[in-house]
Amino acid sequence: MAKGKTTVYFCQSCGYESAKWMGQCPGCREWNTFVEEQMDKKSVRPSGKRREAPSEPQPLSAICLSDEKRLSTDIKELDRVLGGGIVKGSLILVGGDPGIGKSTLLLQVCRNLSQKGCAILYISGEESLQQIKLRADRIGEFSDSLKLLCETNLDEIKEVIDRRRPQIVVVDSIQTMYQEEIASAPGSVSQVRESTGVFLQIAKGMGITVFVVGHVTKEGVVAGPRVLEHMVDTVLYFEGDRHESYRILRGVKNRFGSTNEIGVFEMQETGLSEVENPSEYMLSGKPAGASGSVVACSMEGTRPILLEIQALVCHSYFNNPRRTATGTDYNRVSLLMAVLEKRLGMQLSDCDAYVNIAGGIRMNEPAIDLGIVLAIISSKTDCIIEDNTICFGEVGLSGEVRGVSMAEQRVQEARKLGFQKCILPQVCKEALSHMDGIRLIGVRNVKEAWEAIRQPFSAGT
Image 1 (cartoon, helix red, strand yellow):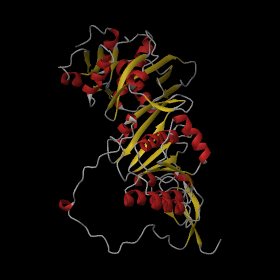
Image 2 (cartoon, rainbow, N blue to C red):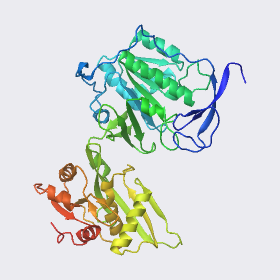
Image 3 (cartoon, rainbow, N blue to C red):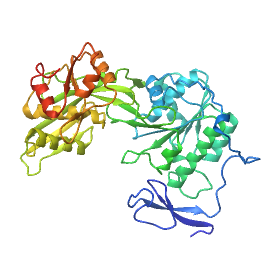
Image 4 (tube, one colour):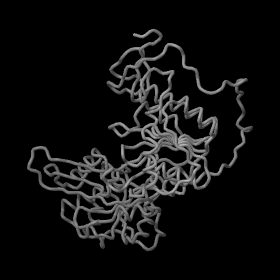
C-alpha cells in the first residue's frame, strides 16, 4: 500500500463509511453494497475561503424574506415540475437512463435562457465540443451568452466559474467530475459525494443555479451514495423507453414546490416537445367496444391524468398461472385479484392474468384500484365497459371502495374530455352533488361496481 493512504469502505447505496468490509450496511440495511477505496490520510480541506469571524445565530423574527421572481425556462412542462420556474441558487439533479433525453432537455433550457440574455456555462465531461454542437444544431439557434467547457477537474471548473460568474451552470455529468485530493477514481462514492458538495457550495455561496446530470443504476436510482439526493434541492427523473417517443419528467423531491409533479414530452427530430394534454395523449388508440379495457383517473401532483387500464384474463394450462403487471405494482394486482375471489366468488386461481397501463406510464396511486378491478372483471366476464365511462377509487381488503382526494379535479378533467359517466366512491359522489354535465355513479364496494358496469343505467345514482 502506498505511503500516506488508507483503505476505506463505502456503501454504494447510502454512502456509509467503514474501516472494514461488512456484509450488511448498518445505515441502509442493504447487503453486499460496500466497495473498497483508497483515501489520503491527510484531511481534505474544504473548498472556499475561510470566514474571518464565525457565524452568529439569529432569531427567526430578524430574518427577512424577499420575494424572488422565478426564472421561467419557457418550457411549461418543466416549469410545472420545478414549481413555477428556476429558483436562484438552487441545485437541481436530473437523472435518467442513457439516451432518454437529459442532455437534450437541458440544452433546450440553455437555448431558451440564452436568448433572454442569461449567462450560461455548460460543462461537459462526456462529450466533445463538436458533439454538443451537432446536437445544438438540431435544436435551433443559440445566443453567444452560452459558453461551453469540456473539463472534469473540479479545481479548473471552480476557477472558470469564479472568473465568469454565470447565472446558470449545467454539469453533464456528476459521475465524470473528480478532485485531485481524493485518490479514488471518478464516479466512485467519495468522488460523487465530494463533487456534489463543491457544486452545492457554488450554488449557495454565489447564488448560481446549478443543474447536475446523474446516471442511474439498473434499479433506476441515481448512481452513487443516497446522500447525493439529500444534498440537492430538487430531484428530477426522466422515465420512459428510449425506443418510444414519449418521455415523463417526474419530480420526486422539490424544496421549492410540490413533489410528484410530472411533465410529459415527446421526442422529435428537433428535440423534446411538450405534450399539453397528457390525458388525450395517453388515451389515443384506445380500442372501442373491447372487453378488459377501462379509463381511470390518477393524480400526479396537482394534475389529473386519464389513462387506459387493460386486463386480459384467460384459462391457464399450467399448474402455476402466470400473472403480469406492466405500469403498476405487481403485488397490488395480486391483492386485488384475491379480493375479487373472496368478495365476489370469482374463480381466478386457475387463470392467467395480464394487467397493463397503456402508454408505458407507471402509476402507483391507490385511486386506480377500482380501474384495475373493473378491467379484470370485464375481461373475465367478457363484459364491455362503455367508452364514455371513467372510474377511480381505492379498494380495501374487505372489498369496500374508499374515497380518494381531489375528486372534483378528477371529475372535471373527465368532463372536459367528453366522458358522460363516472364510477366513483359513494363518499366522493355525495361531496360532488353539485357537479353537472356528467353522471356520477357512487359505489360502496366491488359488488356494486360490478353491477354498475353490467347494468350501467340501473345502478345507484
